[in-house]
Length: 144
Image (tube, rainbow, N blue to C red; front, side, top):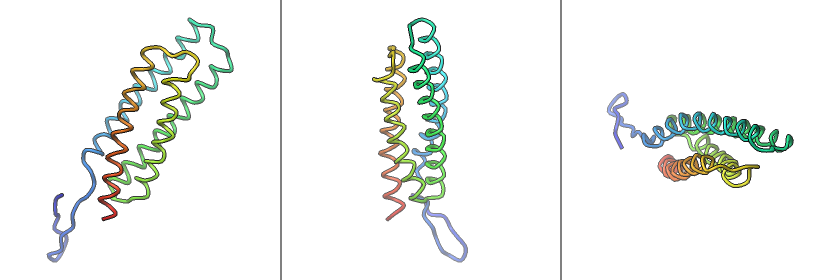
């Protein structure tokens, strides 16, 4: 933790986590790849396999819901980390649970699961786990 001089001899310590901020940025880039690859695989599976229309619609809807959750989660997490506020970071942690559940859906329960789905989702789940640990550490640092 670094100390920064503020005004008349006062010092303030910076507690935001650089590793968490880098992970938020990398996860944002990876999620764009994940979203596009998953969308392409859903289109591929709908052309190659007999994909029931209702399942196709639900898989696409869940993917777009996950994208909205992910954008909100990354925004709140990054904002909370940079401003050293527990509330946005805690909300980001809660949204991580929702995103992880949707990721597990695409890993295990979607209509057709390809090996590429498993690999992409496993990497995303790993980053969610790592972010969650760093979120908790950052929240603990902000509270103390």
